[in-house]
Image 1 (cartoon, rainbow, N blue to C red):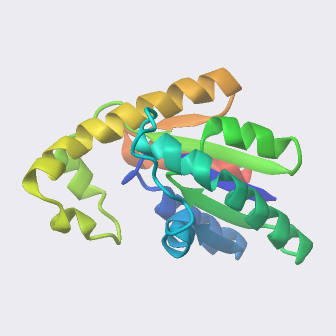
Image 2 (cartoon, rainbow, N blue to C red):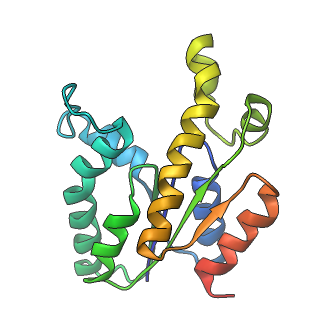
Length: 179
């Protein structure tokens, strides 16, 4: 089974992927790592009117599709891809070719205090300028709203972590594992 976990930045996709890794003992592949390796190939077009996360996701999609294909050819039957550059439309296209189980995570409401509470292993928030840091919750909510709307459009599962982060995170975990 190919598990895909998408959604906005800083919402717990990696944590969810690692819970699946611990339960099923399968590989987890972070698209953040792949994008870092391919940064010179996944270019940003400054004239592109689409939001940056959509540009990145669409530019990265052929690589994601090829990574999935190669892993399956190599005999990896189960693995998790997680990242903020997976879009619901792409999951729908991939599901036409591969056995996919997916979900998306987001926040309809978040502030800096809650964001820092769920910081996880990434300390990059400390590296942001104050203005960037103050705009981050709005960026996360805007991206989450887009993802939520796309999930409705493509009939994919979306979990809003705003009301009860731990409960919704656990529901996403159980949904992916079919529990």
